[in-house]
Amino acid sequence: MDFVKSGKDLVADILKVTGGLGPHAAIVCAANASAYPQAVDYLRPSGTLVVVGTPHAPLSASVFWIVLKSIRIQGTQVGNRQDAVEALAIAAAGKVRVVYEKKKMGDLKE
View 1: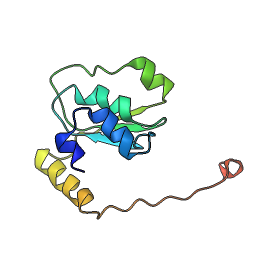
View 2 (view 1 turned 30 degrees about the vertical axis):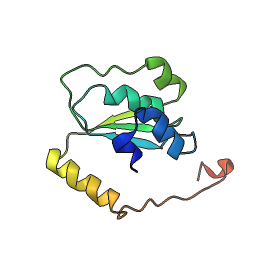
View 3 (view 1 turned 90 degrees about the horizontal axis):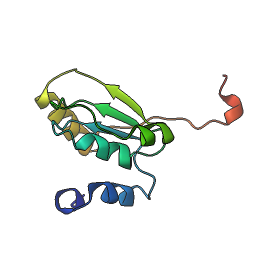
């Protein structure tokens, strides 16, 4: 993922590595307010933006894109900056496993 360190367009780079769809979720730990509208731009439809960092500025993301893409915004204030660094290191080491199950639309009520 060298593009993260050297890329000039974060949104384009993330869309490229996700086949143009964007990730299902973005966990933004940055204290820089510009990271939040970027996350809305690269999240896939029905994606989730998890707000961990606490910038001293209003969240300035496009309501139009949040609504059009059905983006969910979830906030959390658990832990501290070091906890976030350690959690991201665990994920980067490949120790996070996503468990999911595909079902047909007709099975949703069950």
